Amino acid sequence: MKYQKMKGTADLFPEDTRKWQYVESIAHNVMKKYRFEEIRNPIFEALELFARGVGETSDIVTKEMYDFYDKGDRHLALRPEGTAGVTRAFVENKMYGPEHHKPQRYYYIGPMFRYERPQSGRMRQFHQLGVEAFGSKNPAIDVETISLAMSLFKTIGIKDLKLVINSLGSNESRIKYRQALIDYLEPHVDELSEDSKVRLHKNPLRVLDSKDKKDKEIVKDAPSILDYLDEESQAHFDAVKKQLEMLEIPYVIDTNMVRGLDYYNDTIFEIMTVDPNFGSNTTIAAGGRYDSLVEEVGGPSTPAFGFAVGLERLILLIESEQIEIPETEELDIFVVTIGECAGKEATKLVHALRQHDLLVDREYMNRKPGKQFKTADNMNAKMVFTIGDSELESETVSAKLLSSGNQKEVSMDDIYSENFNETFKALVQELA
Image (cartoon, rainbow, N blue to C red; front, side, top):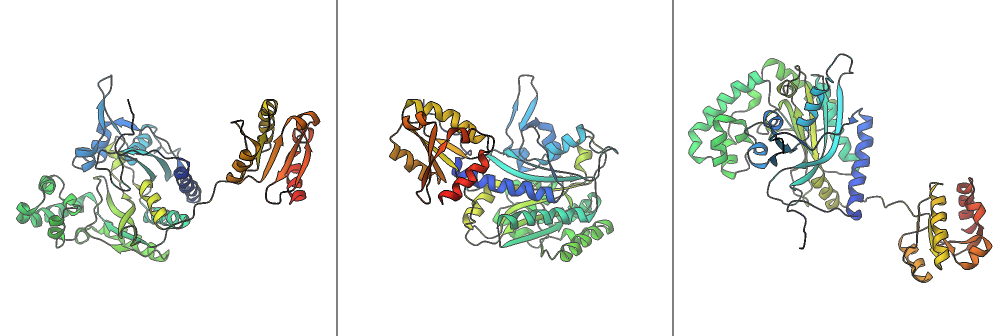
C-alpha cells in the first residue's frame, strides 16, 4: 500500500523549517520584550469548551470542527483555535487568584485543526502564534498588544501593513445594535445567502462578516455599531484610538468588521498586508477584547485581550516579499575518513569536538576522499580534518582551511584537550 499525507496537511523539510524557525525565534524575542510568557496546552479538549467559547453559530463549530467520541464516550474536539484552551487553563488553575500578578500574559505556538477546503495559506492542520492577556480592562493593554503584533511583523521584515480596528461595544450596547441590524436585514431576507438566513436571528452580526457577494452588497448600508456604543465603550474606543495615535501607529476604522468568533467585545482589530503581489488586504493577524469568556468557561469576571497569527500565511508572505532568511550556521569542521580504522576513530573525534561547541559532521558512507571533500564544500565547512592510516599511526589529523587551502598536522592530544576551542581559533588564523 502506498501511503500519502492527508488532504490539508503538509510535510515540512529543513528548507521549509528554516523559515519557521526564523519566525519562531523572532516571536520568542519580541514576546520577551513585551513580557508575554509561553504556555502549552493540549491539542484536544471537550467539544463543549469550543461550543461555549467560540460560539455555537460560528462556522468553526457548525462546519469545521474535527470532533470525535473517545473510548470513554466523551465528546472531544481537536482545537480549532487557541484562545478557548488557554482560557480553560487559566480558569482551571485559578491563575486569576490574588497571589498572581496582573495582568497574566501568555503566548503559544502550535497546530490547530479545521475541516475546511484547503487552499493557499489555509490548511486543515495549520499553525497559529497567539497571545492572550488576562486581568486588565485598561485600553493600554489593547494598544500594547496591537503594538506587539505590529512589532513582530516589522522585526521579521514585513512592510506594507494596514491596521483595521472597530468596536463591538459592551453586551448591552450590542443587544441594542443587534435589534437595529435585524430590523435592517429582515426586508432583505429573501436576498441573503442561506448561511446568513440562518444567522439572521441567531447571530445577525455574523451577516456583516459574510463573504457572499450579495450579502456584502446588502450590509454596505447597514447601521454602524459605533452609533450604538454606550458611554463606557465609547470612552474605551476613544482611548484606544488616542493611544495608537500617540504611538504613531496609523489605523483605519471598518464598522462592518465583526470577527468570526462570538466571544469578542469592545476593541477588535485585523492587521492586513497591502502587498499587491500577495493579495492586497489579506489578513495576517486578528484579535480583540473578550471580557466575558473567562466567566463563560466557569471563572470569575475577568477582562482579556488577544490575537492570533496564521503561520502558514505568514510564511507565504515572507516568500512573496522575498525576505532573506539567515542561512544555517557555518559548519566548523568536516571529518574526512580513509579506511575502516579511521572511521572508528572519527566517532571519538567528532564527539570530542562537539563538546567544545563546534559544529561538526563526518563521513558515514566510506566514499573516496575526493567526494568527501566535495561534500565538505557543499556544507560550507570552514575546515576539514582528515584521518587515514598514517594519521592514526602518528596520532595526528591533517587540518585544512578550505578558504585558503593551507593545511597543518594537529596532534590528537591537542584536540582531546580541554583548551581545544582556543587552539581551533588560533589554527584558523594561522592557516588563513
